Length: 373
Image (cartoon, rainbow, N blue to C red; front, side):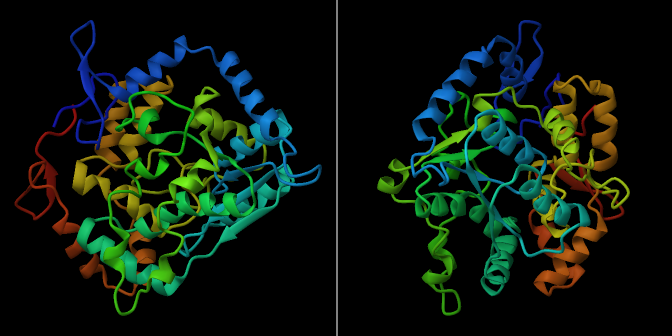
């Protein structure tokens, strides 16, 4: 396990690539991609987006929707809607997926705010809770993927709805695989491969079908047919504008977005503005820690370094303090939802600790063999 000498990301992040720079230092693909942004003509790319919008604008009639945006109500969603509606004059319809966990007060306000602030209709899916609980427990136990059910819907539901509303132009935020390190090493505006970004791919949906879970319970989960994908034009907005999570937060804050300041100081996070919608969902990003040796604190510490907001030494301190922690509030909400005990929860987590990366100390605590320095 080695770390990027520029940020704090380890080479255990799935799909990330490491190379040596001209100074002989280890540099991850996310840092390389971020540095390359300085050579991109974003004005030219935005003109490409304008032409694309011209192609679809008012395609369904003067007062009909002409694009769809996948949103959560978060900071990035606010920025996406601003660009598409206010900058480009589109008439978007917004599609969102709820996770059925306890929402934060900020999360409740933000979903309402994005509709009210920008004057957009928003259709939110409340998934089948019975099926969700059954699939969640299976994916958590077997794969260490506690929220795969929701993550899959976050990608598949907007596809299905864009087809129903005949809004081929479907807008997603950033390509997380390219932006933060993953299998995509070439930036593209095309988001048709979003199902392959590693968050909600790699599981065979058919394995969940049994006496209790029928195929009709999972109808929104299957990959779109090739013909259907061909009828859509899904894009990553991050290709056309210079994407920056913190800048998006500052923008959204000025447009009514609520962070968790004063509501909840999350013990395992380096910030208070990302994935603020609900409580138990944060089990998902934390599960990267036992499996890959890094979690949410590393994710944002790395971004803050790239954005010039932290030095690497400052980021290392944050990672050591927070990455291994998991806020008890998340555990309680997750266990209450699934109807399992905390001991059951931790027994499942223990199965997914990567023994190549961790050892157990004399107190029974898992510690990284090669902690970041």
